[in-house]
Length: 344
Image 1 (cartoon, one colour):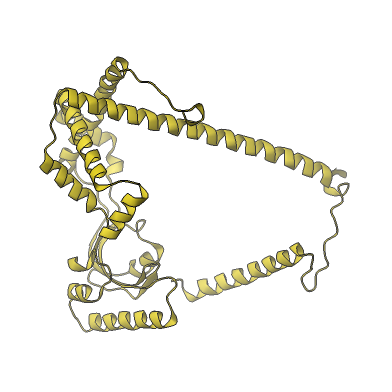
Image 2 (cartoon, one colour):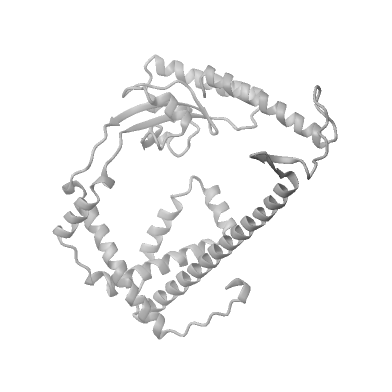
């Protein structure tokens, strides 16, 4: 959704790019584009550049370029290998730590309530847009529902252990929380944001001409009804293809300008509260968007953030306390790495 000038510029760039690509394609086939002679074979003795009249030949340039390319490729491989070695080690360490913590929770007879597992399982499943997406994700990860529940139960047991072994020792004073706020005040600043609702008419990328017309007609009907004052929430419930949000009046939440897709930002940036945008087209289809609320930039006060800050400081202190606890478990454990050398 660019304006006419941007479309014209893009068309010009595309045309010139297409011309260059056509020329390259013809040359690659041993043919020259109209009006251009086929290039002569490169002469290694020809000058690539003259430095105060002294030639650096094409042959010398090509040889040094090949050498430099090989050096860069070797550096890239070393960097990749080092990164993969670090990832493998971190993955293995995390799995060992998790297993040690879970074994310790069992040693201490920490029980996990089935109702808590059910609650967290439902919360996990609610993160998916649909049942189909949930099933597809588990299939891709090669997990069963029973395995997901088992992982959740282990996580609860480990959290309970950490709270018993470490969390109870950690205290945070109001002074510590205030100092944290003062040191990080700039990070708490909130940019301007708007609260948006939308009505989506879904349209696939490979939609047929008839499907595009049907979607355009449908969004036009929505616009007419909005213009005559019909309730936006009711229209969202009736028309929107956004199954997740249409029952909430099309509410899609709060956005800063940086969080909005470019197409959306272009259409809503100048709207006032209560205004509805022109049609926004993106990879999902056609939308009309309503500005429900707006909020100017602000920085929350310490009192507003106090509970969150105290929780953050407590977590940071608990993580420091956890390190020696995990080390004790690791020192007492018999850990045998049996991975093949090329996988360790």
